[in-house]
Image 1 (tube, rainbow, N blue to C red):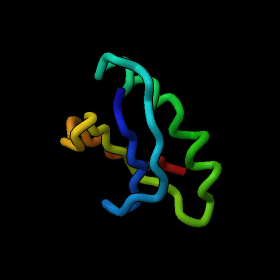
Image 2 (spheres, one colour; image 1 turned 90 degrees about the horizontal axis):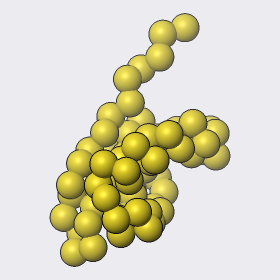
Image 3 (cartoon, one colour; image 1 turned 45 degrees about the vertical axis):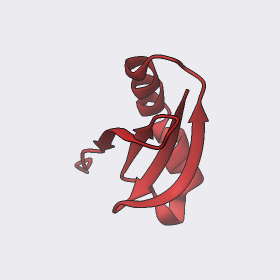
Length: 69
Protein backbone atom coordinates (compact mmCIF):
# COMPACT_ATOMS: atom_id res chain seq x y z
CA UNK A 1 0.00 0.00 0.00
CA UNK A 2 1.28 3.46 -0.92
CA UNK A 3 0.26 7.07 -0.36
CA UNK A 4 0.08 9.31 -3.40
CA UNK A 5 0.67 13.03 -3.07
CA UNK A 6 -0.25 15.10 -6.12
CA UNK A 7 2.01 18.14 -6.22
CA UNK A 8 2.16 21.62 -7.67
CA UNK A 9 5.62 23.15 -7.26
CA UNK A 10 6.31 20.69 -4.46
CA UNK A 11 3.17 21.53 -2.47
CA UNK A 12 0.51 18.86 -1.94
CA UNK A 13 -2.69 19.54 -3.88
CA UNK A 14 -4.40 16.20 -3.16
CA UNK A 15 -3.63 12.95 -1.36
CA UNK A 16 -4.78 9.45 -2.26
CA UNK A 17 -4.04 5.89 -1.25
CA UNK A 18 -2.98 3.17 -3.66
CA UNK A 19 -3.86 -0.35 -2.54
CA UNK A 20 -1.35 -1.89 -4.97
CA UNK A 21 1.49 -3.78 -3.31
CA UNK A 22 4.13 -3.30 -6.00
CA UNK A 23 5.89 0.06 -6.39
CA UNK A 24 6.20 -0.21 -10.18
CA UNK A 25 2.48 -0.99 -10.54
CA UNK A 26 1.52 1.85 -8.20
CA UNK A 27 3.72 4.32 -10.14
CA UNK A 28 2.35 3.20 -13.51
CA UNK A 29 -1.28 3.37 -12.35
CA UNK A 30 -0.80 6.76 -10.71
CA UNK A 31 0.85 8.16 -13.83
CA UNK A 32 -2.05 6.86 -15.94
CA UNK A 33 -4.49 8.76 -13.68
CA UNK A 34 -2.68 12.08 -14.07
CA UNK A 35 -5.08 13.57 -16.63
CA UNK A 36 -8.07 12.81 -14.38
CA UNK A 37 -6.47 14.52 -11.39
CA UNK A 38 -5.38 17.52 -13.46
CA UNK A 39 -8.96 17.87 -14.76
CA UNK A 40 -10.27 17.98 -11.16
CA UNK A 41 -7.84 20.75 -10.22
CA UNK A 42 -8.13 23.19 -13.12
CA UNK A 43 -7.21 26.19 -10.96
CA UNK A 44 -4.34 24.42 -9.22
CA UNK A 45 -3.14 21.76 -11.70
CA UNK A 46 -0.63 19.28 -10.29
CA UNK A 47 2.73 19.18 -12.04
CA UNK A 48 3.84 15.87 -10.53
CA UNK A 49 3.35 13.34 -7.77
CA UNK A 50 5.26 11.36 -5.19
CA UNK A 51 4.69 7.89 -3.81
CA UNK A 52 5.30 7.21 -0.14
CA UNK A 53 5.39 3.92 1.75
CA UNK A 54 3.40 3.22 4.92
CA UNK A 55 5.89 4.92 7.31
CA UNK A 56 5.90 8.00 5.04
CA UNK A 57 9.25 7.56 3.30
CA UNK A 58 9.28 9.12 -0.18
CA UNK A 59 10.01 6.32 -2.65
CA UNK A 60 9.62 8.09 -5.97
CA UNK A 61 8.89 11.60 -7.21
CA UNK A 62 7.62 12.12 -10.75
CA UNK A 63 7.53 15.50 -12.48
CA UNK A 64 5.33 15.96 -15.55
CA UNK A 65 6.98 17.19 -18.72
CA UNK A 66 5.48 20.45 -19.94
CA UNK A 67 3.31 19.98 -23.02
CA UNK A 68 4.03 22.03 -26.10
CA UNK A 69 1.06 23.79 -27.73
